[in-house]
Length: 241
Image 1 (cartoon, helix red, strand yellow):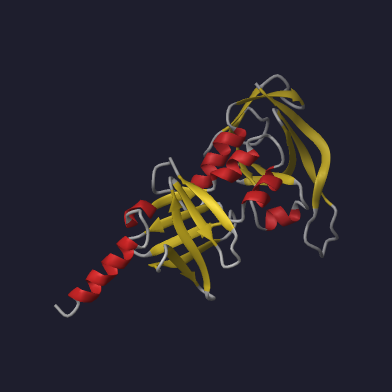
Image 2 (cartoon, one colour):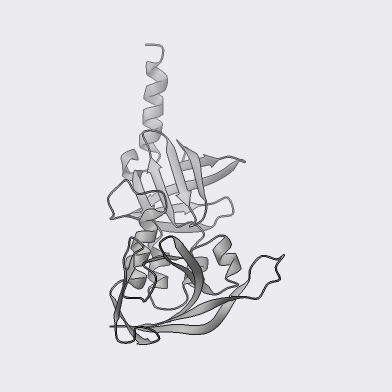
């Protein structure tokens, strides 16, 4: 009985900190605004930079856990209720405020920067960041692409949301660069990784509406410097079929 009162107060606090039920926060939330911005058919790098830096949250109210991914790194925090909404505490005294606005999850960092997230439609169980990546691949590269210039001209290319690519001569796997070292090395360019049998290389690409150009990546840096990749010879031109 000695613990009954504190537990009751905790339940009231968690339940009363917002008009939503605590379990409404549960699940995977993705940065749909970044995906929509990219899907307009312009620079992926600009869209992600403008709508970032976080691309996905996973929230588990029961276990008081909340994690986020920025496309390169992940952070795990402790979820708790405060007087207004929810707070996630990370190592280094970093915090994020969470609240629900209709069907959207809104996050606020200590500087006041806000981001909005939509609940993922993908089945639960994906690794942190995987649901955002899957949705991005579907919207940004989904559908049929026809090779109008380069090896395999006239063929159809399909990029799957699981990272497979078919119809592109040579590679059978791909990954878009979202953040981190690959973004830094891209020197502002959009880049992707193409591989076959676990052997691959980075490529530069440019998206303009329904046209996708893929270029060889040329390293302009010195051997003792971090690579700085720029577009070299154009390898393929794809058009949305």
